[in-house]
Amino acid sequence: MAVEKSWMEVLAPEKWAEFFGRRLTTLGDFTLMMARVVRLTFRRPFRTQLLFQQMEFIGVKSWFIILLTGTFTGMVFALQTYRGFAKFGSQALVGAISVMAITRELGPVLTSLMVTARAGSAMAAELGTMRVTEQVDALHTMAVDPVHYLLVPRIVAATLMLPFLTILFDFVGTLGCYFVAVPLLGVDPGDFTGRILELIKIGDVLQGLFKSTVFGFLLASIGCYRGFTADGGAKGVGEATVQGVVFACITILVGDYFLTALLFAA
Amino acid sequence: MAFIEVRGLHKAFGGKPVLRGVDLDIERGRTTVILGQSGCGKSVLIKHIIGLLRPDRGSIVMDGVDLVKADERRLTEVRKRFGMLFQFAALFDSLTVAENVGFALREHTTLSDGEIHRIVITKLAQVGLRGVEDRYPAELSGGMRKRVGLARALAMDPDVVIFDEPTSGLDPVTSANIDQLILSVQKELGLTAIVISHDVASSYSIGDSIALLHEGRIVEVETPDGIRSSSNPIVRQFVERRVEGPIQIV
Image (tube, rainbow over all chains, first blue to last red; front, top):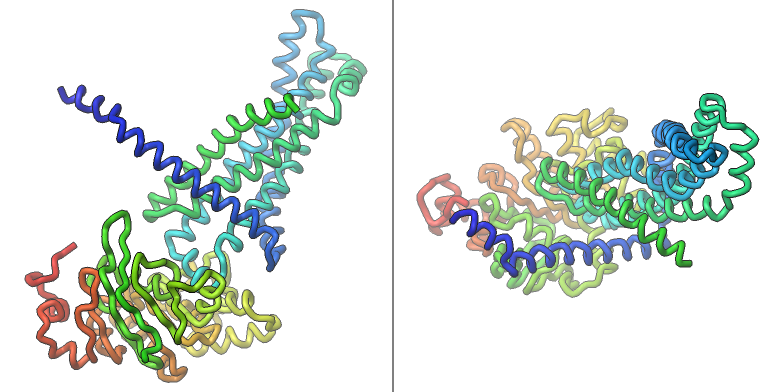
């Protein structure tokens, strides 16, 4: 009887209305805040020092983790594609196919996921802590707009730095692929590079960089928004951080499909 | 006419009323203590006065300017006339003491770094601190943090300083010391001070007038002596720290 009642409760229309209503409200609130971020980006004072600090934190300090991720992704992709292509005697295509996957998909997506884990979580936790310890209110009382001071530099920095990190990922991923395919698996170096030059177009790379720019904006804005709207002390900050990272990762993966479809259609 | 006039202020959150028609006058150059039990809406009232929250109904007029009807740009200008010491100081963790105190000066003035540093040193000396400019907030004791918070609140030479529970979380000696500091700074600079507190002893020693907020309304405004001799049962229960009476434990 208790189980039946609980299902009735779960399926009750008002519960669903409340559930979707809350999410729609959050989405509306997020959209309005991001519109404000875009507007304030072009408003004085331009906080260049804060922007450079964030570019260093998000971009420069992420280089090593991207280097590792990119190298090993390229290496494992070489192994996998070699095994598959060997069945058709097309081992010469290993480089071109790996590089195509890296520049179009793996580079922008994995770079964004790694930066979300490292910098997006830090943004949510830092802003959440500032919110619950009244530091955000302190900015307000000192007549400083917290969105302009805290959110704009972080979101702009992430949007600018992600393409550079993706270029790094693409480069080391290609190198990793080369070192596994050529010296270890015996692919001819001329075939490896020749097929890359033949099949990979500049548009493949640019498509990846465009995606990473969008993902940079998304991961920073979601992390910042969750931190900025955190409440409920340490537990609230923890929840905001987890939700910020999870929502940003899901948005990147789902957004990747739609961006790809859009780019193909274009 | 009072410096700040609050009239019929109502505010509800999620349908739950917090302020139910607050009327309060804040006199220029005097210290007004807003006393009340935890969760009675003192901080909500203060956030309205400083323009962080908009009321559902009512008005707040400061020096002839209606803060409720003011747009964000006007409010930003009004906020520059306020300084606020937060309950836990709310110092920026990532900035040094000097950067915290000089923050508003850097944001709103064209003073050189040298001039800002000189003002920072003066403000820190005013609150009895020396040689802490390069420390980070995490390296300070609770009392020192409050002092730095006060120095930051005073940096822009505000007309009004708001103290949110200035003695909460401090030992009795440090609390008395902070009370002395508030008194001396207020007298020396001729500030209008608004103090939120539930500390009756502290309120008696620093307040020119004491307002008791209960269930979203001001139930009594009196001098400290007037509060001591009040026959209002709510006031009596509060100052005598009795469990029985009209105030229900939330």
